[in-house]
Length: 126
Image 1 (cartoon, rainbow, N blue to C red):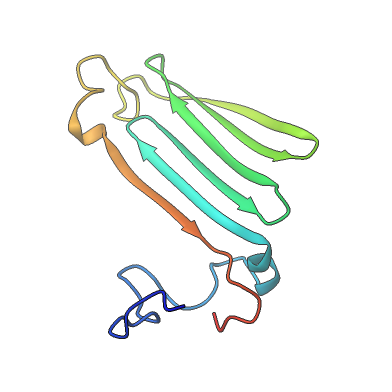
Image 2 (cartoon, rainbow, N blue to C red):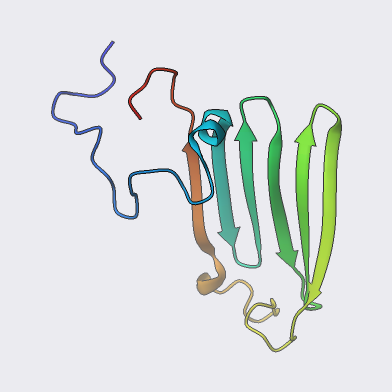
């Protein structure tokens, strides 16, 4: 079964991509990592990694109008959801704190997102 046409270079790197493993990961880690995703929108965001054994690790956060940024780091596994909650108090005048008159401004919209399936079949050249 052919997935791409003969004119597509499947080894071509897109802007921002590079060969090799991400810093801090080795080949064994990559064999366990199934996917990674993240997004940041305005004053909240989420990052998660999913592993082939079913474990999920990540965090999400939100910054309220009161200047408190709440972050939940978590692991979800066959024993349940294990959160660790931290809070940080920000300067109310900071651009990092939503205000009624600015929080719907376009500059606080989608800042970034990514979803990558990392797992490569055993025996693949990557």
